[in-house]
Length: 92
Image 1 (cartoon, rainbow, N blue to C red):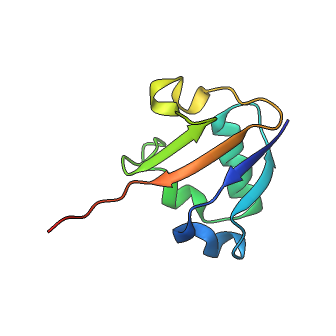
Image 2 (image 1 turned 45 degrees about the vertical axis):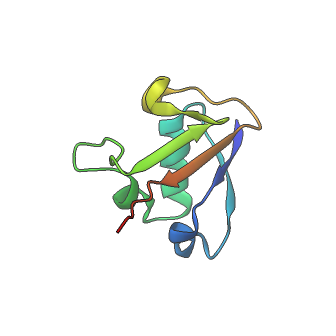
């Protein structure tokens, strides 16, 4: 099932500058695995050593944070968008 992954600016070096990438997958885990297969380097940026999403990486399916759904097992359907959003920190 084809979905679109939105790539944040900071990771577009891995996709030759593409802001969106089509991949196949039935859940978030499969989508991110497919992204790694077609554009190597994502896995080390998105996952910690335990295979979990890094705490500063947010992944959304159709505007819903997967941490509040089924995590990496959150299903995706044909045509949905999966967005990778790095947490932004700042201050004075």
